[in-house]
Length: 318
Image (cartoon, rainbow, N blue to C red; front, side, top):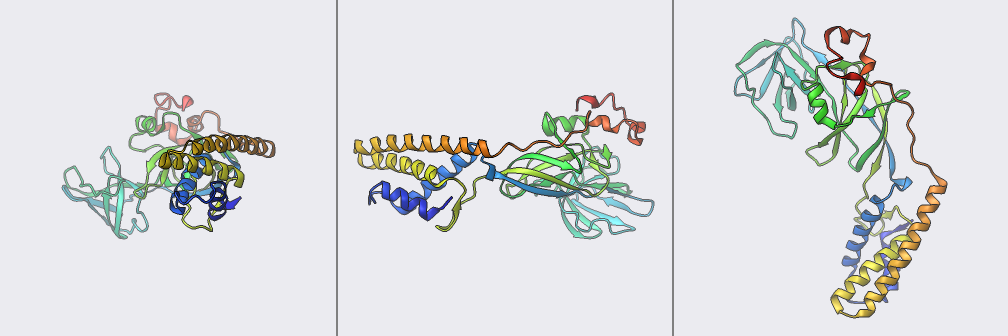
C-alpha cells in the first residue's frame, strides 16, 4: 500500500519530473486510476461488514387512529403518540391501496407524508377521520461507500436477492401487506436523497431484528496526500505513469512520450496480473451460509396463509 503522495512522487520520478504536468493533474490521474482499478475486480479489501436494525410494524388500535385531510400532506394521530422517530418509514392509511413515506415528523402525533424522494405529497382522497393506519419500514440505507451487497444474513440463514427486484415485488405485494416475523428476500431500492444506495427487505418484518451483511465498497475519494490507497503501490505507479505519459504526448506531440506510455502500460498489466494471482491464492470469495428453501414457502402453514392466497402469489418461485 502507499499514500497519494508516494504514488505521485514515484510517478513523477518515472516522468523525469517534467514541468509540463502539475501535481494537480497527477492527483486527478491518481484518483481516476484508483477508482478504475479498485472497482474493476473484487479485491478482498473491498469487502466490508454492515448491519441493519429492522423495526417492527405497528398499527392502529381502537383508541389510536389518524386523520388525513384532502389536499393536505399532514397526518394527525389521536389517542396515542405513534410517530416518534418514524422519518423514512412507510405508512398505509385506511383502505388507500398505496402506501406513503413519512417525509418528516413534526411531533409524536403529526407527520408529513411524501414520495420517498424528499418531496411532500397530499392525501388524495376524501378527508378520512378516525382512520386505521399501519406504520412499517422495509427500506434501509446502506453504508455511504457501498457499491453492492454481497450477502445479508438473519441469524443462521441468508436472505436471497429477489430476482426482478422491486418491480416484481410491486406486483406480488403492491401495498406491502404481506408480513412475517423474519424477512426472507432483499432487493435494491434505488438511492437515498443523499445518493446512498438503499435496499428493501421483504416480507414486512413484524419484529425488530439485527441483520448482518457484507458489501463491496466503492473506491474512496483521495482528498489529502496522506490518504492511503488500497492497492499495491507498484500497480498504481505504473498505471498513473502510463496515463500521465499519454497526457504529456497530447500536450507536447513528442512521440517519445507515447512510447513511454506503452512501456508503462505493459509494466502495469504485468504487475496487476501478478497481484491478482497472489490475491486469489490467499483468499476466496465470500460464501453463503444457507438459504431457506422456497422463500415465500416459509409462509406456508402459518396464520398468514389463512388470509392470503399463496398459490396466486406463486410463492415457491420467489
